[in-house]
Image (cartoon, rainbow, N blue to C red; front, side):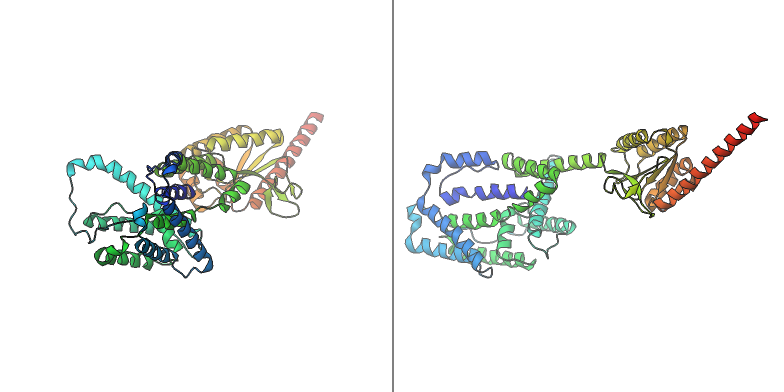
Length: 443
């Protein structure tokens, strides 16, 4: 999303870089179409100023990060336009900037329109917050010493918008272009935007005439260099190599943002992420465990096929997720598959519940049904490694009575030894029973 938004914002500056009238759009194909249709109207002097400014900024950045490249380019741009009168040759400039600050007044409320404005306000607040967090995370990834606190960001946005309403301010959020420029300028702490606000305030009061001759192409160059710096090429490559599902999510969000718009890209990106999360939690990882030879450790037989041993009377499984309505059927289906593989010799199922941190009511009902089905097949279910919150659910739901208090163990090895002893006892009892029948028949 961040990369797509950076591309759209960067390309939206083409009208200033080319010195032509290009209709703005948040959709890249429309934006490029509008730019190409007006390409013949390009002002060569404006384009030259913009390109030189971009090269100049990038060169200064490579030479020294301590030099304020953006400020230097702004000063040079103003001096060049003023000295050579290039605004008379079609180079568009900022022109007259209204001076003064907005007056302080209590915002007015039209209570009759609250129901009409509330849905719009909530949507705007959500998009503003997500945009601020997106650009903050993008900058955070570039600096090892940065850590974004989402709650703190939300408080800051809310406070600034409440205070801004007393000065007729537009809705405030973390902007991509401004954040990128701030980062490019070397800002490190919250003091930077405070200084920036102070300078803007002083400029509006006393210095607006100085920016009259500032070419729009220079401002476009500053924004384009800053936002294109937010584009990350390494991250998608890493995702493609290691996490294909997340890579395709990234591509989908990227294309939606480019083709549909920034706001839509945020919302649809979040929606797709939620769908992917639901899919993952509905089909979590289930491992069949085997005992590492000559030890009491139990590991995934798929990962350690040569080091583990399994037993025909035992099925040991680990479920690596919470049990809830979304994955209970998958859990039961996979469990029954393993039962079929084991065959009629299976007597004990040990469920390693270390990774299960919650069981909802529908999953409780499924477990109760499964336990009863296992009992009809004379298969005992034993629980190992259940954490505190999960044990609480076993007790409160009554599953503790269905399973039996004596069938809960702290470790898988303890559960295995318990079942192994029961298995040996059952085998001896069966042997004694057969011997008794033999001698009874002889008598």
